[in-house]
Every structure is written in structure tokens, then in C-alpha cells.
Length: 374
Image 1 (tube, rainbow, N blue to C red):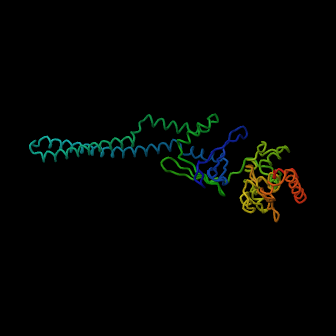
Image 2: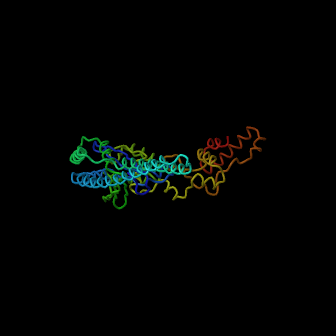
Image 3: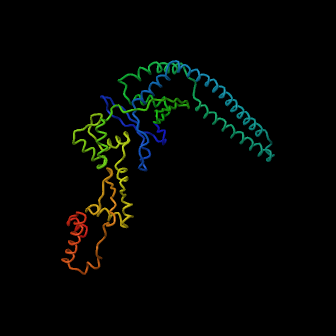
């Protein structure tokens, strides 16, 4: 399977539905090196059925008979080309033998003529060797004639193929092998309709159009509404835990996971938590570091002790930060050199006073402020 959007190979992901394993085709080729959304996520049930019906249509006794007739015509042409190549080899051999006889008849005392005839003989021998090599290579490439036993086996395959393909006892891996022998590749494009471009060995192509696939089961509207509401306050992983604690289940009757919540958001067009927080004017770590002219490590320290309000935006432990306004946190209110000349008691007293001031303004604990100072 090839993604018709980015051209990457698509992965297959299996799900058990109604005690049967069903594939989904996923293209995440663009997420290997850069964090972009997946190109396509396509339910494979309808795709597999459509391609299977096409193979049953193609692999028939009549189609095999036509193929054999074309093969026979090609074989006749190959035989003619082989005859011409063989004549070319015989002509090169005759010229080499003629050059040899001329060389053998020359007077040994006439060295100039002998050298010329010897060089001509060597040149004809090289031409004969190249002609023979090309003849053998082309003969192996073209193949041998199709015998009656092979024709009989192909007819048997065309007759047994529908029964083998439709047999429920046939393992999926065997169907994969059959499809691999009969198909070159399949390109999928999900737009208003699902386009399936099928390429056969030899260059023949077919295009199928299917209705846009829909999920076999639909998540309850109340669950989607609740996920939309929870995205204002929690990342996908936390939402999954909340829904599971309430006893809610997915459309397939399984507990929720963060990945399922992320797919549900894409499927139903919900805004991500990152987009919602950005719409409120929150800043990334780098933007906040530039805003306050401090390093990111200092920002994380302020966030951990509560001096900066930050919100978890995804399951990768990444935060977006509220703008602190006109009174952002500062580094040490007095220089390290000044603190060096103070006693430990004076230093602690100064820190407590500073912490109490901040507690009154921002609701911070003295312990949190002291963690930052010491």
C-alpha cells in the first residue's frame, strides 16, 4: 500500500472486530522526522474486499487463455529474434575463422603483413566473444517456450483461485502472498471518495472508486461532547483516565487510551488542547524565555515552585505558559555578592520577608519561595 498524498509506504494496523481481525491502513511517513499530522487513516475492510473482487475478475480461465495467446505470440517473436542473433554469432565466427586462415597462409618472413593479419584476427575473435555473450544473456532474459504442463497448471490456478480466495479457512498471510504475486502496488487517496489505483506487473493499471469509508462503530455523541469539553482543561492521556474512571467505553467496547482520544479528536474535527491554549494567548517555553530574557531552565524552576502558571498541553510533558503581565518573576532580589556578606540568619530573614510579600500578591507558599532561593 502506498499513500497517494506523500508517496510513503503505508503501515497496516489490525483490530479484532466481531472475532475477526480487520486491517486499517495508516500513513505516518511524515511523522518519522518531523511532527506533522498523519496523512491518512483508512479502514482496510472495504479496500481489501474491492481489491479481492478485482483479482477474482482478472484471474479467470478466459483471461489466462488470452494471456497464453499473447505469450505464444511473444514467444514466436522471441524465436525470430533469437534466430537473427544466432546468425549474427555464426557470421562473427565465420569472419574469425577466415581471419585465422589468412594469418596462417602469410609468409613468415613478411612480418609487417603478418602483424596486420594477426591484429585483424584478434579483433574478429573479440567480436565473436562479444556476440556469443550477448546471445546468451538475451536468451536467458527472454526465457524458454511455455510447455503444455505449465499451461495446464495456469488453467488449474485460474479455476481454483476463486475457491481458494473465498475460503474462510485460507489464512490472511496466504492471501497476502497471492496478492503480492498478482499486484505491483496499490495507491490509496481519501478525499470526497476513496480512490484506489492498482498497478499490475507489466504496467497495466486499474482505478476503483469507493464511498468515503466510515468507521464500523460510531462513538456516542455524549462522549464526543465530553471529550470536547475536557480538552479545555486536560491533555488526551488525562481525558482517557477520566472517562475510564467514569466507566465510559469506546465504540468497540474498549477502555479509552490517550491515542484513542487523539484519533477521536481528528475524526470529529475537534480543536487540540494546544490550539485552545494558544487561542487564549499562552506562550511556548521558548517564547516565554525570550519574553522574560531568562533561560528555559530558570523558567522550569519557576514553574515547578508555582511562580509561573503553566498548563500541560499534550502527553509529552510539554507546557504552555500564561503571560505574567507587568510583574514577572525575577532572579535573586539581591546580588550573590551582597548575600555573601550577610549572616545566615539575615539571609533567611530576607528570604522569608520576600516570600511573605509574594504570598500576599500571588498566593504562593513560603516553602515554595524558599525552594527557589536556596
